[in-house]
Length: 222
Image 1 (cartoon, one colour):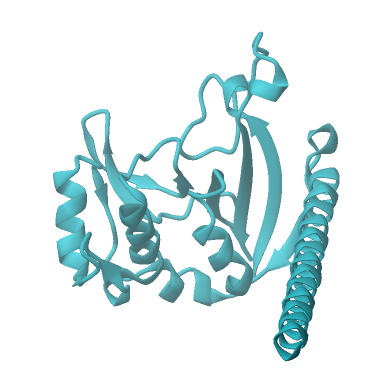
Image 2 (cartoon, helix red, strand yellow):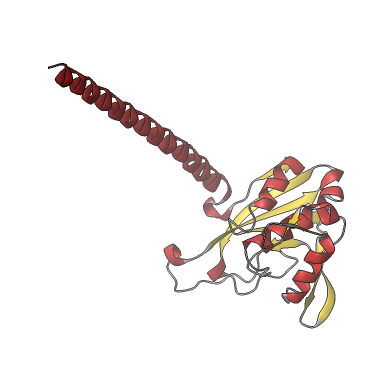
């Protein structure tokens, strides 16, 4: 009899544990869904404000806004461009293009510059931002110098030459930027020049649902 009572107690304890776990999992799931809904709502609001009818909005931002945007450039398919207030492109780095060395580049765009794997892309962003102060990593996780990464870029035929002083300590520290935000479909652009936002748009037969949406963010130094 005593064993039966103990067994019932153990069974009750197990049931309570299962119930508690079920409630916890349900709560976490609801929290995740709520967070995702907030993110999607914010994204829809941004899309409505920035994208509807191909209009753009503008705002003044600083490096605390620009740096996280640069970090997301490759992962979220952004094109980011930098200009002086008068529209003159700001050099971020140089590259070899069509056999011409030292071509000045004022944009960050995965579609145009194929860097390599995710580690190299992360290193590129870090080196672009912080130059020889950047925390760069080799494939095995160990650290690498700015010079070693520059050589790695050269070996990978990226044709890119980064500055030893990153843009965080040059253009970003100078103050405020006017941010302009837009969007286009990559399939609807015949040619996007390195120093302009969007040009030569044309219609394709590809349904919009199958097209690649690309966000374009331009920063004008004030």
